[in-house]
Image: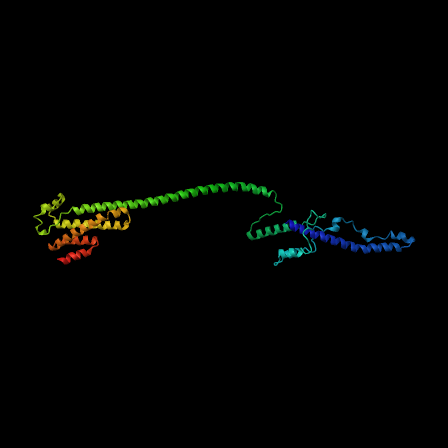
Length: 342
């Protein structure tokens, strides 16, 4: 803005100098004519010369401002406001074109004894008027703009202080929320780790309980004699606990009872295989492989003897229970082998 004012001031100074020279050139011939006319009058008619009215002297006196400056309501010849309203107006080209004959220093009011017209104020007022009218017509709202803003910096400073305080509060709240979020994520991570560890521990405990139950159940049935047709003779030697004796008292066949018990053991072994498949890489499971393998071999032997005995004695219930046990441990091949041996 200061460069533009210097530019306008320089242009006005140059134009004022040119106008002064033109005025002197225009007035000089009239002065010469008047001087020659006064010399041609005879002495007795010299009194008439005093009666001749000088047209220049009849004009009202003009001040230095009228002679060497422009009126406030006019513009320099090179300044045409209509150019600014053209659709293809280019401000850069306009300035470059005027700089060839209007230097910036001419528009500096501090270096010029005669102040130029306030072109900057005119432009500012025009811009404010255009902005106000455009805002009122486009948005339907009236925005009162003014070129005389008083103490704008102080108002900005007063607004900045509460904004900075609000910003500090928001940053503090954001820091607190971020710390709580980190703590919450850490807690959730620890919770998930604890849940995973608890799941593994429960799996190990269930595996241990199933192995113990299989070992206990597989030792519970009596040893199967080679010929179950004489089972009644060896009944007292074969039974090992009071529950089996109670079943005999109730008329339950010992062969059927053993087949039902083997079916239960087979279901527990199937459950044990499921646990091993989900925790086969754990050291605890690897240490129990010997027990699990020995229990599986003992179950296969007991189940084979019961299956053959059921077929020989045509015991449908025992035969059915043995088939269910083979299906539970997913070992139908052993049943086929036992069936082919008969």
